[in-house]
Image (cartoon, rainbow, N blue to C red; front, side):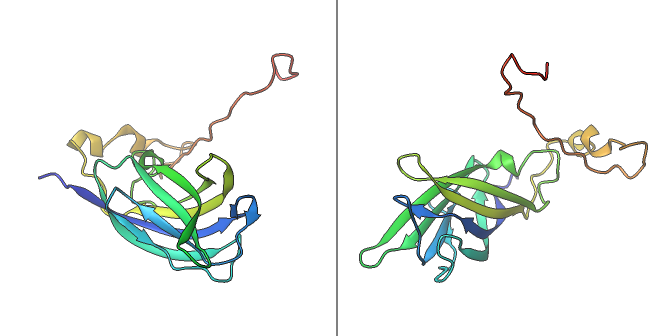
Length: 176
């Protein structure tokens, strides 16, 4: 029988340059992590970090198999009524599942926060690991060629990761 969800271990590490209406956040920032409409958890509030909070909160959550994005909503406790949203980041699940590295490998990711107007409002840093990997659809998938690529003639079959490079130079560039 197929699993209906996976267990996601997401550690919300820190934030950088958090702002509301172009003003630095003073204190009381926290993060709400959503895996679907009903599945969410919050970090503790950082009362002293200001616009550079440090949470280091590990949240273990069920993530439905149909989930395409994990949403991070950074908020701060307002003096008076409710919470103010600093910004939101949507993490594509494909950023940590289905790549060349195993799904259970711990991955460190950073995402730009955007407010409701689309303005940049800081950065949130997280680590993510899937605790229960997806089941391979066949025995052939398990022995994929990506798992057995020799590196530089060695027999240890290490992992190679590439970094995409954007060629954004104008056509009159010296680098033709």
